[in-house]
Image (tube, rainbow, N blue to C red; front, side):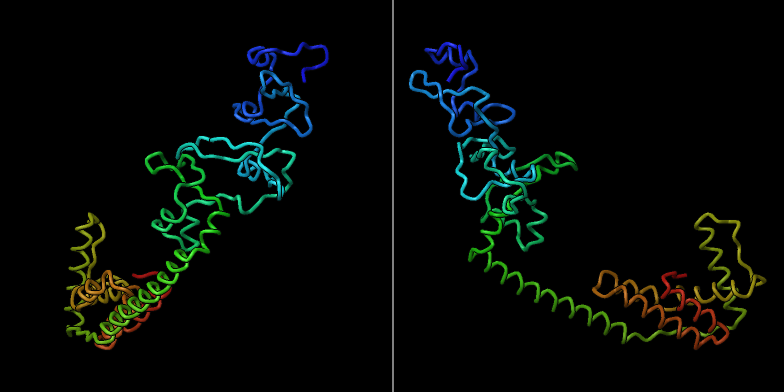
Amino acid sequence: MPATGEAIPKTRKEAEATGLQTRERWCRTRGPHMTPRRRQRATVVEGQKYYREDQCEEALSKWEANKRGMHVARGAKPVATIKVQTRSGFVPTEMFRISDCRPGRDKSEELINVTRLLQRGWSKPLIASLLGKPDDTYLNPHGASSGDVKLYRLGRVMAAETKPAFLAAQDGRDCRRAAAARAVQTKREKTQAYVDGLKIQVPKLTKRELEEEACNHYNFLQAERGKFDQIASTNAKRDFLDRICVNYLRHALTSYESCLHKISGKVGRSSAYLEIREKVLEVIAEKYPYLESECERQIARMYEGDCC
């Protein structure tokens, strides 16, 4: 009814001019959606019921209520169904009175993205076939070229997870995972068998020959790196000479580099690399007893994570 003292409009145009609107128009208003409160007397104009703004309360969708930390009470009936525009198009959405909302989130109305779906055991083909269009989208914060972030209502996801198609896909996934784990283990065992079968050969040189060749090798590498001020000679400190001698033997006079190349990209290469390195250093220590302490030092530092 119009406020006390106001004339009752006779046409729809007059009703709208005085701020009266139908229930449907209030629900479709921009900004907060509205709906008449319960037990409000309508103003009937040309067979249509009209209401003033002070006769209305806010209307929310379940998703909007959940976003505000509320949930729609069980048994509450929607007051209208409107089409809400999302990035994926117009989606029919039920609206409820805010007076029918209660504090606390409804977990079934929570929205989850594709990443969380994949963590729950979904795949992209399953999402497309069982869930279809997303319930909502938003602009990807990492850039528009990545596409919109798709959101799915958790309640709908949980219902889909009870379907035979989803359960069958889960069984197939478990079988594929088990087969993949067996294949990885087989590849790991092959890599280990290769390492176990390695025979490392180290040539025997005199101490002077080894030191001279190691110094030449070190100087060549430093020149390639543009470090012309770092020159090694046989008059250098003993610990420095021992280190470059071991490195020269390992890199230049054994099959160490070719062995590493063969395990490159193989499953189990990380542990295999350590074993090959340790095996080479042990053979060097056996062939050159005066380099044993340097070989032990490099092995110890290798397992400390500082490979020198």
